[in-house]
Image 1 (cartoon, rainbow, N blue to C red):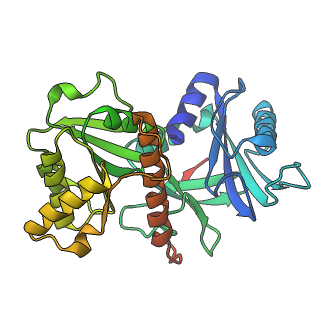
Image 2 (image 1 turned 180 degrees about the vertical axis):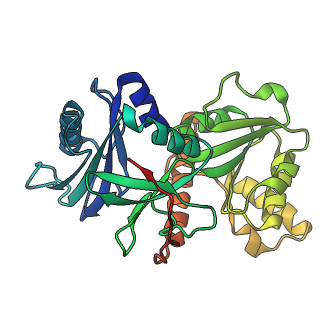
Image 3 (image 1 turned 90 degrees about the vertical axis):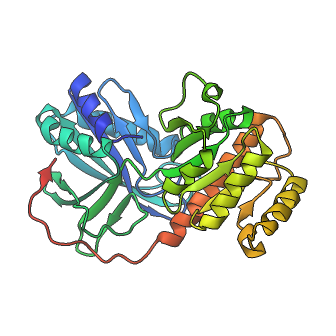
Length: 337
């Protein structure tokens, strides 16, 4: 969900907006730290901090903040989910609610433009009734690296907005490929959809998808970033083999999945041994692709099984990337809310 572009739109359309952020979670909670909810004066909202009573309470508090222009623009709420709200999670969460109005349009537009351009990382401090933010420069350290919200030891806040999508190179625009693109539409993946047949793609695709009709699909792997995911499901077993072999030889992709049966895998392994690919490298190939406990073979079900597996691999990679915070360099120029 785009955060600052949505705040910018809400202010333009209705004159104000409230950003609700889950900033602390102790014990069980319906969402992770950094989850966000954007609220506008007419009662509409975008995003979620987990639904249920907690979210209804946050929506009511946001409307109260929107109705009182003279009050503080930042409010902090601490709630025990069980005793205070009757929810079964059993944990405790802290929310911040920030009110923005037309007077904030200029600097909101600055952050919105930065978020549209890619992943935006800001650093901020709370100063009285507002939070002062500025974008981090490209050469500054922004820890913790995988988090959307975190506090440094000196109390400053590091936040991530937009971006962060995992690049997925999807080879094949057949039935399963089409279903997978739809399954991934609301998920944090940037899909590069590749097929040598120009007419294979549908006329409309989700916003996170780029279609490439490539006469030599395998060559597109050369430009794929290290750590990208690769899913192979073309109309041709020979092309499948070429893509898989090239991806294994590159040895720099975080995930390589191939649609097919155990028999197809065995045949591919035999063929790859003949071209010098070691068994240890072939162990990185996921085939059959997706969660195999899902037995349904219809394209939407297969796509759901693949999407779930991709999320699991993505989450595991994000967990491994967590390192202790090292802080950020001092700064001078700031953007204030």
